Length: 272
Image (cartoon, rainbow, N blue to C red; front, top):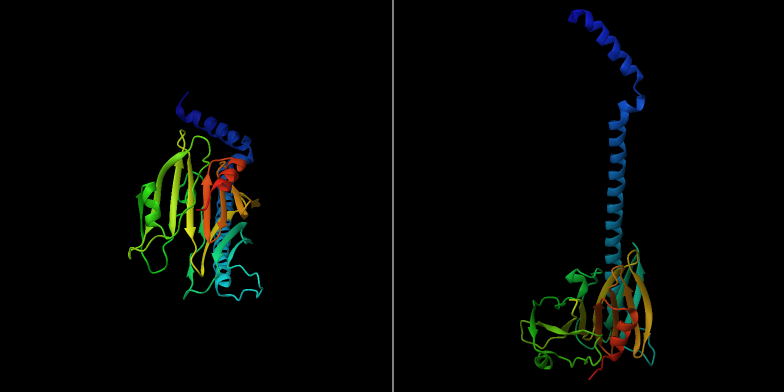
């Protein structure tokens, strides 16, 4: 049989095959792309919304810090200039404020809120050094015996470290004018290379520090300590953060400890 005789048969068979194909086959790729487009648009909308809420939270936190510093405190005989507070902000965020509202010094030294919450990210594990506005500082590591000569305050001691932890290093913020520092970071480490960071910061008159925590990914609770109240943030990776005031000293502890061990460590700190 010649090729010319086969052509009509091939055409007829091909036409029948096309007619028997399910309609969905022709639109599969088109429908898949439409579904993908919808998912991408929804994801972008969520990202824009979360970014906007985060900005709102930061702006709100800044306004509240300003109100703490420049607002008129209630006139009571027992008024204490040292305060701490927790506020729920838009976007499932919590903001913590710690400050010294005594305005005897000229001008207020405001430190903006910071966002940090994961355990293995260095910026989230340790409370970073906060230089005062207009001053550039750098961080140096010192020996334990040198600490008191470098600080403007006497740091508390740590007589009861969690099991297996030892002092790894001490970092101090050094100001360009050679003034003694108001902040020190102690880093402890165990055999499993897990870190426990303790940031101590003396709050001068009219100064305030703030931090943020995500309510969506963390659990925040107010706890009672022997010397006052503290705020405990528990993160999904078992890292916990405890923040509290000891007189005019802001204390920020971050580590991979149980709630009980973290509180016991905080309670054991002795102010000299």
